[in-house]
View 1 (cartoon, rainbow, N blue to C red):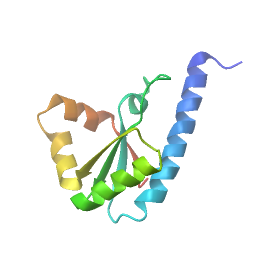
View 2 (cartoon, rainbow, N blue to C red):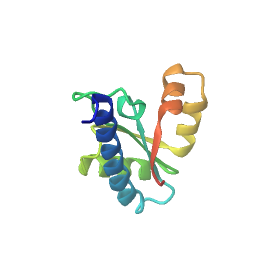
View 3 (cartoon, one colour):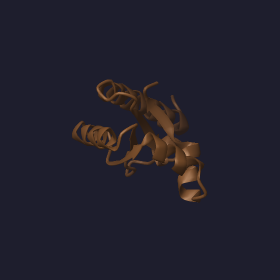
Length: 112
């Protein structure tokens, strides 16, 4: 019998695999785009009430916005933030502790 910890990790792995697959399919139509998972699911401290937080990152703002909309339409994320590649790099390397933590903990889902 699996322990509770093993069951949680198995479910997390399954969820991450599904998110990677869905994100990869959407990123393929957005040149230079990436999808990042952040928050409790990325950290591994999620529970049944946790939402899925995603970053849609692309070189151009319009592409990031379109990718964010596609992720929401596909129901891959509950909260999706659109950022340019340049802005994402600035935020994750900047002085704001909130964004630095996101930058450290985020998992790149696509492209992988």
